[in-house]
Image (cartoon, rainbow, N blue to C red):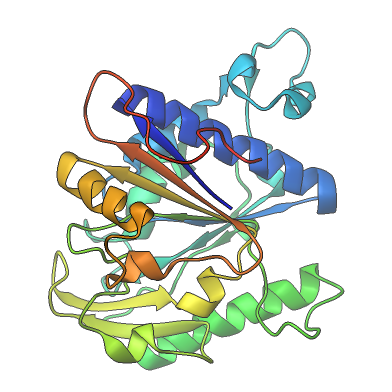
Length: 277
């Protein structure tokens, strides 16, 4: 099922955060923890701060509001039950300004009490990129083997509870770029290394692959800016199906688009407008 929420930056920011919190709380209710994959780039900074702060309980799905404590009117994620992963990473040192981990650290991790053992960042390397991708894939396999008694089963692909994605002006998502056929056609690896010649900045990166992303329980696109939201509308309507973001189609889960184009009002598009938590 695909849903679309579109409007001002403030409204879409709150709707996206509310959806993530609601879905995370439901996952915790189901199996005691939530696996959340973070997007990189600069667009999610404000969203991550909002997740760290929490939201007024009236913005959260009704069946998740009982997670408040006392008279607190804010619903916050129980970070001790959140397992954080990354959808992609630039191959730069840990504290490099281009590091997706550093961005998440500055906007989210520094404002929460998430245990260090709950943070599964991608390797930060400047060489040995293929080996780094394999190491992160091994990390993911160990995690799912220890947290899912039923995996591996008939389905060799595990299911993250929530994967948050962004999108570039060229339609790339995670670090899956339009001109990278080997990465886009990968059918077996969970994580692969890419050379993003047209990335910003150009260089080597690690990324989750399409089969792994498309096996998630929920995939959320958070897209900001007029040019990107215009492209997103084309993808949603079926008018653009060649860019990598158009290939995100969860096999068993839901797909939700949150589009903030900088306007002050809401511009409805076809499809349901609520978070399917």
